[in-house]
Amino acid sequence: MDPQQEKAQQTPHVVIVGGGFAGLYAARELAGAPVRITLVDRRNHHLFQPLLYQVATAALSPADIAEPIRHVLSRQRNVRTLLAEAAAVEPAQRRLRLADGYALDYDFLVVAAGATHSYFGHDEWARFAPGLKTLEDALEIRRRVLTAFERAEADPDRQRREALLTFVVVGGGPTGVELAGALAEIARFTVPRDFRTVSTERARVILIEGSERVLPALPASLSAAAQRDLERLGVQVWTGKRVTGIDPRGVQVGEERVAARTVLWAAGVAGAPLARTLGVPLDPAGRVPVSPDLTVPGHEEIYVVGDLALARDKHGSAIPGVAPAAIQQGRHAGRNLLATLRGRPRAPFVYFDKGVMATVGRGRAVAGFWRIRISGYLAWLAWLFIHIWFLIDFRNRASVLFQWFWHYLTFKRGARLILETPEEIRFRAVAGVAPPDVDAWPPNESDAERPRD
Image 1 (cartoon, rainbow, N blue to C red):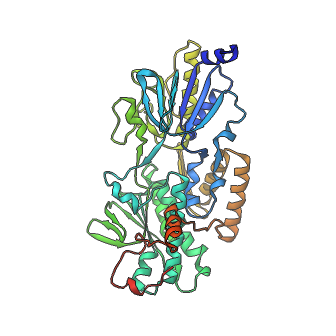
Image 2: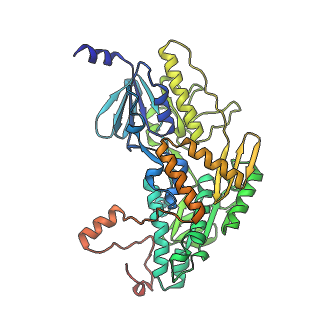
Image 3: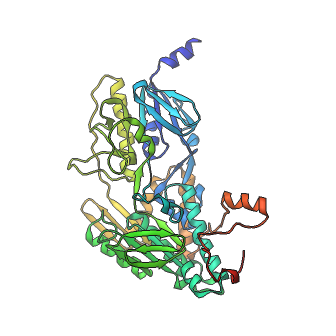
């Protein structure tokens, strides 16, 4: 081994799992530090999740809100990135196992693997009600929404058309509110002139929230303002109700049945499965209870940050899984790691709450910053500025700003492309025809008469 390689081997090795906000900002905090960093992610891009719903509703294209991780960190010479999936952590050996069979030995580990969908024990609902966490999720939702309009245009049966033009969003948090508002805008302002047979303005958008109000993390006055804006757009807001069943034909809400071909899930999240391999107790949502300095109890070399961490603020409340919290935790983990290398004590994490905001539609939003509460157009401008500011790359900022300006003037959504799924492509290659879409067209007595694609 030459001297340069030997020196590199003696340099502390920091492995970061996840290229989201927490992982990326942890890596950036270590820029110029005397460490070797390996960032592992099963996707090659950093995703700006707060705008993911705009890809799902055809307002933006995937490249507008994503940037290759290698490009983001290209100037940071002490980082290498690996396109791989983390399978398990072996804390005793200080080793991270990858799904491809390889392993990485580490001196310090930063776990920022994020969260996935939680269907509260009903994982069978996932097939009928996709959630929104990845670009793949967003493109699948976009496909289902746009396909519903297309098939309603072709179907002569009134009941099936009504089911196709019924959209149910489960969960009244920011993602659910934003999805419901965008769906109502699409139906009422974006596509009506494009269809000849169906009146898309009559589409039914239902937002279902189990608690007594939407956006429960916001003050009651802002929740009420958001609900009023949704209802002005034509969204039916059902609060205090819980979904008890989802199938290809629709949704069961207690004793009430809603026939709907498009159901979207925004009701719950669970920690990434990697957390189960850390050997520590998890909370009911699969998150890792961390020490005040964001390390795993009993393992001072392992940090858990972002959506996967159950960290608490000075009042003892759980810190929410939002982008500002993930950014702050990532930075803090990097600083504590540097303190350890320099022989200094680690500092406890102090969360600076930057508030919660959600856009309800064109020119409508609600926002709560500390004691400041705003709604309407001013909140929408604040939402727009903050989201543009936090986009990673200047090219993304310019593209998104132009798209928003064009959409604001014309109501047009420029990404209304329906892409076939891999299953459809394989089926067509073998059979020469499109596969039956059982989610959109459950078999019934009158299916023999319906038009085929």
